[in-house]
Image (cartoon, rainbow, N blue to C red):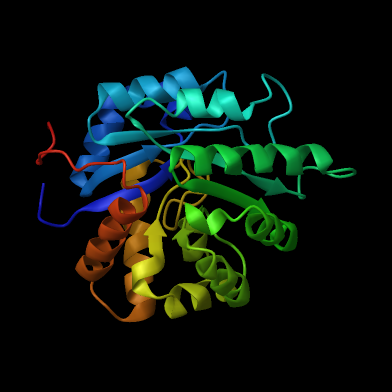
Length: 268
């Protein structure tokens, strides 16, 4: 591995298609593109054991625990459930959590309550939040403020909102993470945010297996494609890939303070 190190700050390794050749192949692809670390993010308590197992198997993979706002089946997490699972040293964050009004409608009280429980668990454990928000930015920011989430901070993952929303999130001690969406030709407002963002508050991600960046749009995403996201942001800002890589990797370990670098290079 070269001296260039990138982090896929949000992926779902447990959801990747094994037909690719297995997880070792996914890791080798990532290694070849200088993706040194990955955060494998939980979407349900039922799939959490698989997420945690990957973090224990691969020393450069970290885990989170949480239930996605779009999950309707399975166990509803209590604050105690989340706190208990977060005691594992490989768990570095709570989430993903948040609000989604695109795929849900009607009375959103249940989603708000779930979100608040995740925030309570983050504050109790001192582990930051991974927040998903879709067509719900005002309520998302309001609840984050009401719950005093700036105590632990977190990341607005797969950010797709405007500059004002990014500023409000940063005021709440949140980082902004860009996915492959920033490479889409239609994402003009998001490109503007990526250009204006303070470098010290930026992360990059894939959200694999979803949202593959150009030039792989429409295909299954994988951590190796984090490089395309970082390269695109570097081009937008007129800086080197190395500058984006250094900043976003440092930011990752600053935010996720329970994650610790491992000896590199990683196994071929």
